[in-house]
Structures are given as structure tokens and as C-alpha cells.
Image 1 (cartoon, rainbow, N blue to C red):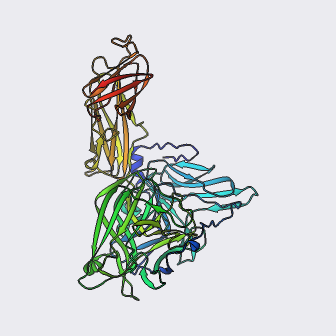
Image 2: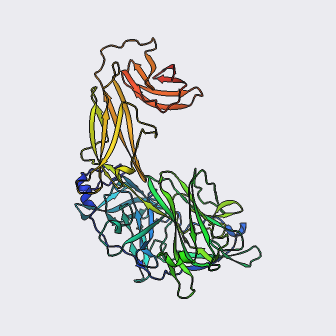
Image 3: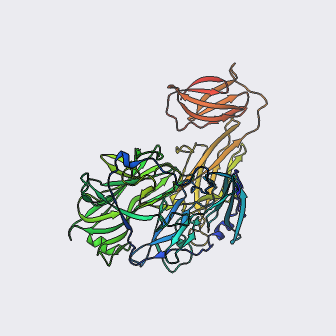
Length: 602
């Protein structure tokens, strides 16, 4: 498939199912460090800042100086850590991956300061070979198949001709040099599909950049930390994000609304200094996921976030036996305490397509003699509001401006086990919609999908049942003897009833982390005359639970309940059309067709 990267224009992704399947064998070298004994983060001593000490947010670059920069696309998270089978410890990328969903369009936009021109260089695979393209503009759009490629490179030019360059980097302490980041469009870590001598157990993604000793622009000013805290009298009181005597027992991250859905199977917390209070002691870590209406941007002092409805909760019990038998935990030879990533799994995979807030709590309720989560801090924004929070006096306040100085964007090491499941058409032959004749019929549609038919849900676009005249089902392609990432959507449409000339409905296909809409239309012969039409030029009635609209011309249709709320929108063709209303409760509705309105009792 040839990649299409366009300035300020959406690229179309066209590929056959066979090409899609062959793309899955694309290989890449992974840059990482693996540790049998997890490396210890450095400490910072903090206390709750006074109003005078908080200060205003500092900008590291003069407004008139050119500074190249871009934000990661919304929902394209940093893959900073993973854990492997057979190793007591974890691996941390020097050059973090960006986790991207395959077969969809992604957008990269310049956030450069003082720039009058921008040039992008983007890498991709073409016929399984490395390729690249350069384009000018503020923004680029493009899609990737199942592959691993270098992150985009941005060159910005100022009014005085000065040039600045940016590309996501990570610091390699073994070579004392920066390494370029990668984009991975595999649903999880590439090792899940690519040949490897090491089995990857878990992958961890974060909306906040998290890599050792790096602030992403060729210098080493930031990385992973833990914080010790003082009480109001200036006395040492334990760990800010762990065991302490000042009542701090919850931390969280705000995650922006993604451009494309993703799935979460667990929450992870990167930590060190774990030790139980006694041989019989236990502690329960709890992760809660909430809806989030908005994410505040950092201004002065600290900001607050208000979690909404709880979506899911999960817990993980820790004791000495769990510590000794969990591969993700490693013992420090110097302290005798444990470091690693705490995995808190959910009972079912979560489908996410809205802003969320992830809270981790329970670590300061007894059972532990020591524990601290880590946090990352650097001098650049991620572009989607303030990410990191700590709960104090019943409110979630930003770590930055409360305990961490305002110059650094900060977030606790609360991570997500993310899956970027794919669900796509064979877009070389499918447009995403079909029009049946009046007699109806059947259509089979090839789907390229990461999950099998048993995990798919078929509904109308609003989540309700499909109309009675339309049935849909999915079967897996098992010609190879097992599920081979291919499925077939079968759509059946009944003949048009007498007097009806047009109807349509959307089939929504969802799996955890992905969704796809297939539009089904049915068109009869155009009528030569219209019978039984009121003086207003329209007629509306109920038939089989749907609204049957007769109109003299193509017209927009809006349906309102008696409270005046718009409950459905569609379009009627000239003649008679059926507007799906199975999801509407019985009652009185006002049906507006064009400029005319009639009352209908359902």
C-alpha cells in the first residue's frame, strides 16, 4: 500500500485484505534496556508550596525565538515500558514508541513557536520496504499499516531564517547519546507478532512522556523521580506518592479524548522501595476509571480536576508471597526492597473513546512499611491539559504547582495496558456502504480485524437494535484452520414494502478498542405521482414501529419529543421513506419535514 501523507487534507487508506495480512510480518529492531534488577529512580524532597512559592508557569523558550515542537496525536500514547517472561524486572525504552492504531488516519500538527514555515519528514513502509516523504505545512495527515517506523521529524524556520528541528528522542545511558523514537501500529508491543526470543508479558502506555534521563530535545534535564514529603512543620513524613503520615493516599492521571477508540485491560503503577509491614501483612491497590468532562490547562498555582461517572474499578492484593512470585518485581541488592510495575487488571476489557481520569489508591492504608510510585517531569507540555494529580483534602489537585515547581509538566507513573485493536474494510473494494434494489438481497463484506466474530457486537448507530427489515451477522475466516485476522460481515435486506421508495440504516460493528460503521441503503423506483399527501405537502405515520414519511421533495427530517428535545435526525427522499424509530419510546412526537411539522402518536 502506498502511504498518503497530505498537507491539511485527510489521506485515504486503500489496501487489499491480502496486502493487509502480509504487512503483519514487517520487522523492526527494538531499542531498549533490559534489567534483571530494576534501576532506582532519583529522589526529590518536596513540601506543599506556599502561594508565593508556586509562581506562574514558566516558558522555557522566548516567544520570538523559533523552537520546533509538535504534540503527539490525541490517543497516540507513549509506550515507555514493558515486562518480559523469565526476567525479574522490566525494560525501559531509551527512545519511547508511540502506540498508533493501524488503518486509520492520524494527524500531526506543528506546535512550534516563532515559526513562519514548517517542513515534515515522515517514514513508512511501502511493499514492506522502508520509504519516506517530505511535505511542507502546519499539519500532516496519514495512515500506517501494521509496521514500526521512525517518528516524524519537523524542521521549523523563523522569520530571521533561523532553523530549529524536533523529533521525539530518548537518552541511552549506555552510549550517552539520544536515540530516535518509533511509531508502532501493532495492537500491542511488536514482540506479540514479530519473531522474538523473549515473550512480552505486558506493555505499558502513558499520556505523559516517561523515559529515563531525557527531556526529548538532546539534553538530559528530566526523567523518573520519586518524592519524599515534609509535613506542615517541615518534618520528614514519608513518600508523596506512597506510604506517608500526612494522609495522601490517591494519585491520578487525566487522559484526553482520543482521535480513535482504544482498549484498556489493566492499570499499571511503576514503583520502588516496596516492603510489607510484616510477613502476614497485606495491602490492596485499587484503580478507578472515571469519565471526565474536561481537562484543565495549567495556569498559576495548581489546578483541580473533577472526575465524573465511574466507568470501572479493579483491585490487586499484595503480600510477601505475591512479591516473591511476580516476575514484574525485582529486589534491590542495596536496600532489599522491591521495584517494578504493579499491574491492576480489570474483569473485562474497557472500550475507551472519551476523556477519562484514572485514580490509583489504597497504598497508604496499612500493610506496607514502605512504597513509592515514581513520577516523570520535564519542561514541555503534552498539549491536552494538565495530566498528573494527587488527592489532598478530598480534591484532586495538580502535582505541579502544589508539590512540584510550576516549571515542569509532571505526572505520576500511572500507566495503561493499552490495545489499539483494528477493525477495517478491505478498502480497495469496499466504500463502507451499499445500496440495495427494492427486491432486497444479501451482501458479504470483508473485514480485517484483530478480534474474532465472537467478540463483535452489531447494533444500530445509536446502540439500539437493527430495524426489522435489516439483519447482519459476522463469521470468521478459518481457511487456515484458525482465526486469521479476517472476518465476513453478512448483510440481509428484506424487499421494500408497497408504497415505500427509500430507507436506510447504519450497522455499527464494535469490538473492545475499535468500531466501524457500514451504511445500508435501499432505493425503489421513483414514483410518478404522490397520493394521500396533505395540503402541507407531507404526511407522517407509524408503521411497524418506524416513521413512514411521504414528501413532495427530498427534505431533512427532525423528530422532537413533547418536551421539545431533538431525538432523531435523518433525511426523506421524494416519495415515501422509512425513518428508523425502534429506539424511541411510545408517545407523541413532532415530525418536522423541511418547513412543515406534523404530530404523530407512536
